[in-house]
Length: 128
Image (cartoon, rainbow, N blue to C red; front, side, top):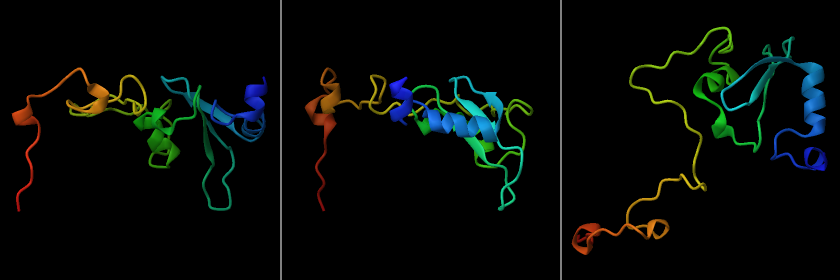
């Protein structure tokens, strides 16, 4: 309970949950468990405010492409009403893996000490 009160990075705080729950209605949820909300009335700018409440750590790269488009007003309808179709050449969405065990580690890097390239192929000095 104290975690919800004082930490904003572990999902939404109690104040944010209360405010969003009071002003907006839930529109949907994505495959990562993030919940999306929209206010019923437009603001002075003429747009309805949209919110996301992250499940777990607040990481914006966890928003899939279809919900990202809706959050940034690229699509008027949320993906729950009008599903987003991926093109044949598009890969499925993956969150940013930097800082995790699944992060990319190139060969010959300090983080990937197990894989060593041969000396002659790993580096070529620049000669002007």
